[in-house]
Length: 167
Image (cartoon, rainbow, N blue to C red; front, side):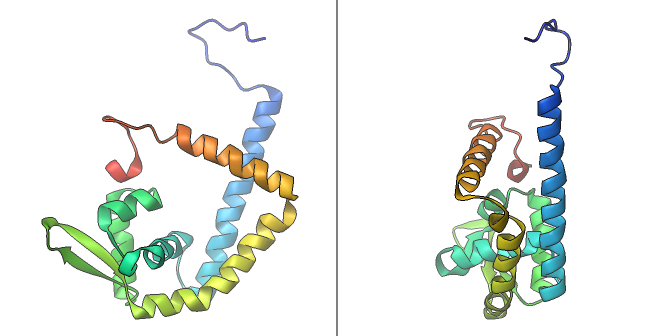
C-alpha cells in the first residue's frame, strides 16, 4: 500500500526497480549487440537497417519522409541525417512529391535492396540468438503483449502529442 501524499513521488518498489533495471540492462545490451552485428556485416547502425526494412516493405519501395519518420519512431531531423548517409552509400534516393512541393519520398534503390538481401539472414540470426532462443513461447507471448501495451501508452492520439516524428 502506497501511503505517499499527492505531492510526493511514487517511488518504485524493490520489485519494480529490479524489473526496470533488468529492462534497461537488456535493451541496452540488445541494441548494442544488433548494432555491432550490422556494423560488422554491412557498415551501418541498426537504425539505418530499420529504415531500409521499412522501405522494402512499402509499396514500390518508397515512403514519404514524414511517414518513414513515424514508422521508425524518430525525429524528422534524425531521419534526414540518416537518409543523407544512406543516399551517400547509394542505398536510398530522395524524390520530390509531385502533389506536395514540400514533400519528399525516400526510395530504396536496387543497391539498397541487395544490401538487405545480403545482411538480413545474419540480422535475423542475431535477433533469434539474442532474444527468441532465450525465451519460452509463453515468455515470447507475454513480452510481445507487454511491449504492445507500453508502446500504445506512449503514443497518445490527438493534437499536442509530443512524439518524435512530430518534432
